[in-house]
Image (cartoon, rainbow, N blue to C red; front, side):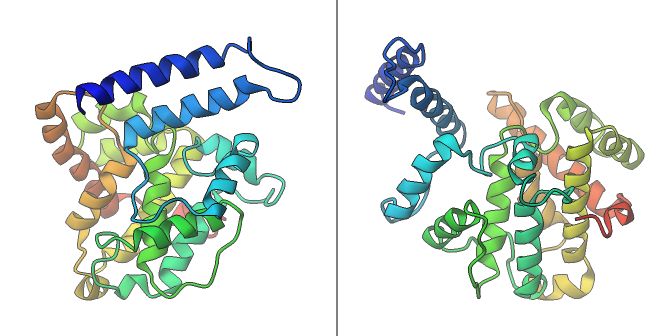
Amino acid sequence: MTNDDCKFQIILEHYISIQTTGNTDTFEVPISIYAKVCRKRLEKILQTGPKRGLKKPTFEEIELSKHTIHFPSMFGSTLEEVMAMQRTRFPEKRLPWIQTTLSEEVLKLNGAKTEGIFRVPGDLDSVNALKVKCDQWQLPSLEDAHLPASLLKLWYHELAETLIPTMFYEQCILNCDKAETCIRLVHSLPDINRIVLTYLIRFLQIFSTAENVVYTKMDVNNLSMVFAPNILRCNSEDTKVIFENARKEMLFIKILILNLDTDSIEGVI
């Protein structure tokens, strides 16, 4: 980031912060509501980077962005918020609709036999378009398994709180090579985190079987490498720590794929 970028960021953050006070609100335009959303989105961009893709935002994307000010997106929210969003539509569901829908679509499109699944990204602009549709509770007809696979990874990555919450991170890293301890850690997670993680691990176990790896070239090591950053997040800014922990994060996920009993999630929707 250049000095000019830093200056602009500081000015922008200060301006948005001033607008969140409500002092400039009018009955017609509650500016503070929009400012708070802008601040939250800016914080997310600074954390994860801007949207990728070659195209400018489409009209549909812009309209959705405006819509989600009052009706939040399933992306970038907490698991609790996602479950609250779907409660009126799917009161019986214990798992996020977005998670199960995209996971099932990957399998439906023969993703378990698709080379490079989860490693090879789907077309970025097509993934962004699919994201818009999913945020409207729609799943268009798809032909490429890489599209739902990429969006599924993005959903995990953009969760406001990682699938394994920060308070559990150090224990995961310290015990990454101890299967029994790793499993106990999973069982100690909050209920929604535990069942969502268990569903994900069961899903990855499908891809880790020898008969599927022959086609996908994505063995348990590759799956762990791809998914670890979407499940665990190192908050250190020390490059050495980040690099060293990345290996431990991958090992932790590998241990779960190989050892976690996921039968309990069968039949859960």
